[in-house]
Length: 611
Image (cartoon, rainbow, N blue to C red; front, side, top):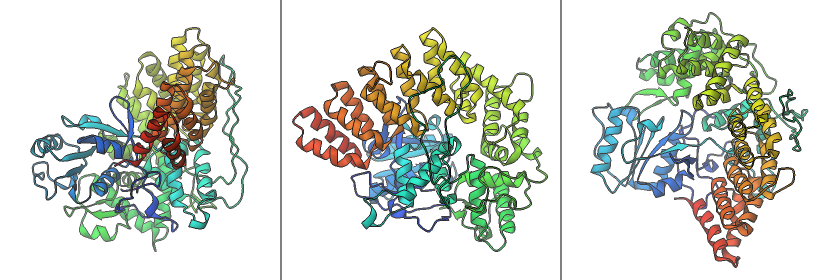
């Protein structure tokens, strides 16, 4: 599924990229303005943009979960490479009959690396075509062929989300200089809920959020974010205000809700929505079980099916197939009739329990990786207790089953309290005692206040190493409560802890972190003593968060900061790629009297130009 076109952020000419989107429900969509060149991260934790990675490396493997835009990235590279590119998918070939000859072998692009045979084939092609550039996509770096550099697609940052929203709510040429209030209201609605913020980080989910979004009919009361904190030895008061919001629409906070709203909205336009839903669910479940879809299924696909290059009929996106298969297993009797919203005609906060759910077929496949997303969608459609309880059966629960239980409980708005407490306690122990990164990620999905309180208590420990570790974990929990604890810790007596707190703020999903990070960059007294190390940490964190608001301050440090701070300001500006930085950078590159400053500005502009 291709969600991107070249953004006006880039200085290079926009390529023509064919869009193979899921059905679009919005008439205001402007496909000519929607490519946001994604950031990618290598094994050494270095971040660059896809166009620069493609220019600098001859052998690339792009990795990421479903929905992160891997196929779109290949289409973007193919469009830039022109007639010298060959783009194919391994899914269209038998593992023993993979293509070896290409009409044009300047760029060889392969989607869907999933088998050892695919890895071996790419290694063979690298030897056979030493002068060709080869790029492929896979779920993770374990599929990387020898000699390939693996790059993980990064979640969308604030700048990228805003750019995407602006493309969906374009303004006429006469009004482009004005504030795009429609896009601003959508972003405010996304930022108003922690769960929605998390969804918007994934390109596919941001696309779906835009499909189900309806502007607020009138101004509503601001949505409070600040959470009252229990006394755990740190001050709950911070000098940084909570943003006040108007024109906020309610958007789904869980993935299953989002997919359910989108499918409901699409099928509601059909003559018989219930029949359409049952047909799609049946096709999804049968093909998930290995049966081949027939040609007549394409006509009954309601825009969700396509014909692949090998003639096979398939869903346009695997996550859509997994969602519909989960709906089939929940045995719904129709599109939940009581789930309504005056704005969009469907629910935002809950999904009606489906009738007569049949968990037995899914239980048999619960630990099969190919059925994991089906299980999590099933959990989000009301079956979280069943999935979590089955995952936790037995005395000594293996970590993989514990993680599955956590993600299942995270998929629903109302997890079983007893199961949730059991899972959180186990994950907290693994995160703290075993330094288990998978446990930390699972806690981040759960957004548990109980976990936030546990690690916040560690912030009062006399040992700076303990506080350092606690700040690191709190930065990955993505709760408003964890954010409050971190903001309070900006005055920690330890420079190392303050640096870690600033880095943790850069990982936050809330725009509330921008002001304190700018304060740290400027050396404001609201943060404890701010030396060069603190300013460097703030520049790095601002680059990670990616807000336009940070551009003026970073430009100042690019000009007047010391050599080390200047280098980090340059890298932060490269990560953000804000269109608001282009003219100031051009002026600096042309007129500044210092060679180092002119060269730094020119390097940022060169990075933004990409391929």
